[in-house]
Structure formats: structure tokens, C-alpha cells
Image 1 (cartoon, rainbow, N blue to C red):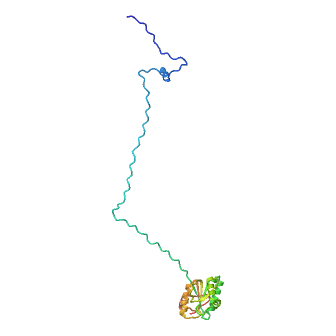
Image 2 (cartoon, helix red, strand yellow):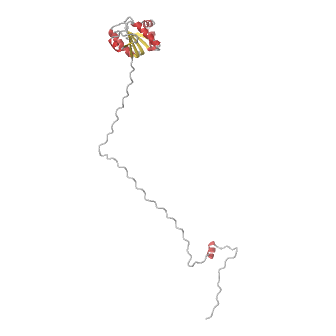
Image 3 (spheres, rainbow, N blue to C red):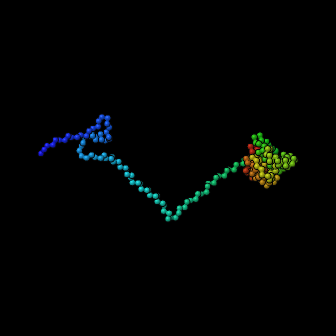
Length: 225
């Protein structure tokens, strides 16, 4: 057999200096040694699996309502509010000055002077006579009843009046003068005078057994039996 000369092996020429490779991947392929076999495609990195949400909590059961089939419960009604104690009525002090009907006016004037000397305001004193009117009452009435009652409304001085006074008058101190009249009238005058006084009632003379039992004798003035 004839022997043919071997054909020269043709190698792919590399580009000369300064000539860029067509693609960077081509240059890498030329310098990468062949490992044999067909080239493999680059595999994409698998993404991490997303976390699977856990099971949701089951809803809580609603609280069971009370059995309403039975009779309804009766709610007790509130009782009445406790009553507040009424303010205590101020106690009226009662003093008795022993005197005869003829001496009662003089003893009453002395008692009024002592009250004023002790610091009492003249407008706080009311003098009531059971028998004959007090001389000061007669004097004030001489100027007319209008002027007389105006002094009572003004309340700036000691006021003298009859024990049967019908006008609503109240003062801290009432001086009752038992200078005459019947025992029944004196007893009635004492009850009315006690209602007109707010702090002190001074009884000059005899005003009946009720006054003797209820009133004490004033200091220095012994009570008559």
C-alpha cells in the first residue's frame, strides 16, 4: 500500500497581542483544560424553601351562660337612707329671782343692769310684765304705737312689752316680771316667755308652781318656799 505523508496538524491560532478575544468566556475556554465529556450547563442555585406557617390556634370556646330556665333572681331593693339626727335644740337656762309682786319691777331692773354690765347687747334683752306695764313701756308708748313698734323692729335697745305680746319676737334673754295678775296668767306667761328665749330666761317674782319646780334661784337671791 502506498504510504501517504501525514498532513500537518492545524492548530487554531491565538489572536495576536492587542487583539481582544471575542468573548471573555471564549478566552476562559481556551485556557481551561479539557476534562473530557460534553460541557455541562451552569446550574441555577436552588432558592431556600419558604417557612411553612404553623397551625392556627383554635378559637376559645365562649363562656357558658347561666341557665336562665329557672326563676329570675330578685335583686334586693336598697333600704331607706339612714335618717340624720335632728340638731339638738339649745337648752334655755332658767333663773328665778325671788320677789314679791311689789318688788318684782325693781328686781327686774337690777337683773337687766347686771346683764348689760356682763357684756350683753341691749338688743338681746326682752322684758315682759305680767301685771302693770313697765314704766319704760309707758314712756315709749307716749310717742305713739308706730314709734314704739319701730324700736322692736330696729332691735337696738332693751324692749319692754306686755307678757301677752302676740307678735313673734325672740331674743337671747327674756326677763319675766311677775308683778301682779292671777296665778293662771303668770303660769301662761312663763310658758310663752320660755318659748321666746333662746339662751336665758330670768323670772322675777312668783310665776306659779311650775316656775318654782323648773327654775333655780339666781346666785345671791334665795328662792321663796
